[in-house]
Each structure stands twice: as structure tokens, then as C-alpha cells.
Length: 180
Ligand code: 5GP
Ligand code: MG
Image 1: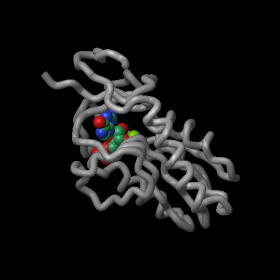
Image 2: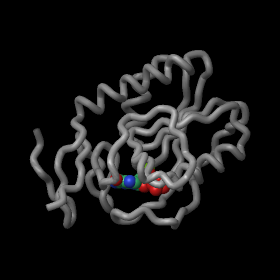
Image 3: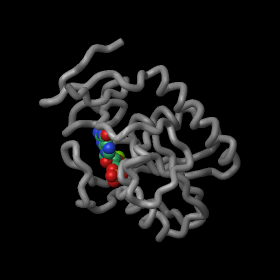
Image 4: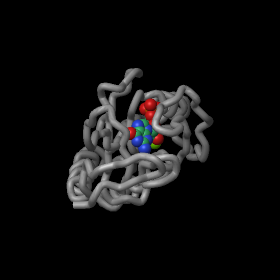
């Protein structure tokens, strides 16, 4: 088991270990496969946080599918803000496509609401949401994720794609902030 780590000024301890993440991602891929096998879905991964999940999830998908990436920023430090920036890299033709949005974490749901609105405006055939983490009790917007890795408490986490002010995305495990 990895020890407590220090990232910038804060301490984090192991929370969800890589074996558990790997197992859950495989299950998510199996659930997705059951529905999308013959639909050539378009996975839309939200950068930067979802890059690891997208890479792991997509390698468990054994049928025809495509992936594209969008980027949005709504988070500074350890507090969610209302400061939504523009969605960029949004160049695919989504009309008639079955879209699966791939996110690292849903906190208040504001980012996802913003993404859903923009994806919807391109007339896809369907939209579903796959997120590794959901802070269900933090939700302030009516977001319903279809594929959820882990439902977690309202604590700040990092690792497996998630950062704290730029650091920690490469950690294999998910860590949670350690409070004294
Ligand atoms: P929301 O818009 O749902 O409030 O926040 C979603 C975004 O905030 C996520 O995509 C992620 O970038 C960031 N976020 C929310 N909670 C956490 C967390 O516990 N750790 C990290 N590293 N980012 C988080
Ligand atoms: Mg994110």
C-alpha cells in the first residue's frame, strides 16, 4: 500500500487502489458493450481529467467505436467555481451519432450540464454519461450518469487523471485528502 503523499501544501492518502479501479473500469466497459456493440458510438472524453479513464476504458471496448476529446475548465484549487469556460476541440459531426461522454468526476454537475447542453445542440441520436467518480451528495444540477465507477463522499481526490493544481494526474491510485 502506498504511503501518505504530499502534493503542493496538502496531504493525501490512498483511497481507491489501482486494482479496484481496473476491475471497475472493466465492468463499465462490459455494461457499455452490452448496449452499444452494433451502434458505432462516439466516445467524447473530457480533458484533461478523463484521459486515463478514456485510455483504459477504450482498450476494454472490443467493437467498432470512435473517440474524440473536448476540454472544459471549471475548477480551481479545491473549490468548484461557477466560472465555466468554453468547450474546445468540439469538431465532430454529432448528428445522428450515439454519444457517450467520458468524465473523470461529477461534483456539482455544472460542468456536465454545460457539456450536455452543447452536445445536445448538435442533434445526436442519443447521449449517455460514463464517469469514474460521482459525488452524489454534491450534485446541484439534474445530472443522471448512466455508467458510474464509484459513488464517493464530498472529499477532494486526486490521481488516475485527477489533479490538484496540475499535480497528481499520473498517480496509479486515487488518493483522498487527509484531514488531521
Ligand atoms: P462540477 O462542475 O461537477 O462541480 O465539477 C466537475 C469538475 O471539477 C471535474 O471535471 C473535475 O475537473 C473537478 N473536480 C470535482 N471534484 C474534484 C475532486 O475531488 N478532485 C479533483 N482533482 N477535481 C475535482
Ligand atoms: Mg473533469
